[in-house]
Image 1: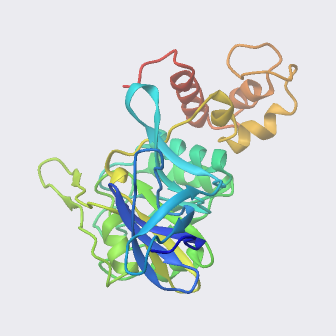
Image 2: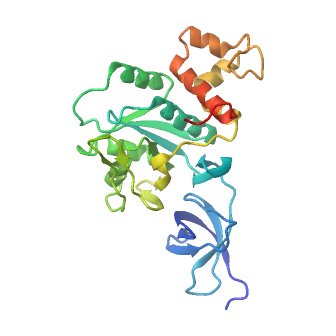
Image 3: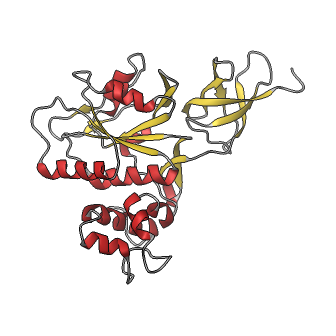
Length: 304
């Protein structure tokens, strides 16, 4: 038994219960075991590990400070961590199921509050029929705000290289409603990955996500894609209203001209944000998303 086991850093590339896998600095992979309940590593974490003896599983000693954490609401008002140290959220939409733009705004706001980029992936472009005019208008509004949109079809293998290009040199995660094809996109990006496909139920047009472990998959050009079972019912968590305010770039811009420095952009006089909404400079629907998310985070509204 070694008296002074070496301690080194590693990247968490899989997490499931008290076990998981690490990518070591030499490029090799190995399993790890958690002792106790203090540490709760997620994919993307940089950890300090030690090996008590040759041939034994690695023991995690600590988790390095995270650059950011993607979280969802947990029990008793706490937050559950899904992934760490992300650069990019890929928000997936499709014509079926019909896009939920409040959820889209919530994902994008979460990305901004974390200091991440957000890219919209319009998937299933091979399906018959076109998006309705209102949906097309919403997508145009995102484009005017500077959000990039990638058109994809896993059936036709279209747009997959564009998604991979956005992930080059970055760590990202696919998020979106169930049934929009997130798992199919991952399978197409990573043919060798074991990822269950969410099938559309013909009766409900709702997907059934059956992934069982959080995994971090390596992509070409030093990219990483995290797939988590939490995506099925994933709603981003915001610790306070300041994180909500940081998530709407058009509101941040307009807020600089509000009468009061601490303006919440709700009922205050001299609010430039409300003025821009009335004049059509800021999307009224996006503003409603801001108010709804603000009140939900503040605790004034119960999550529907």
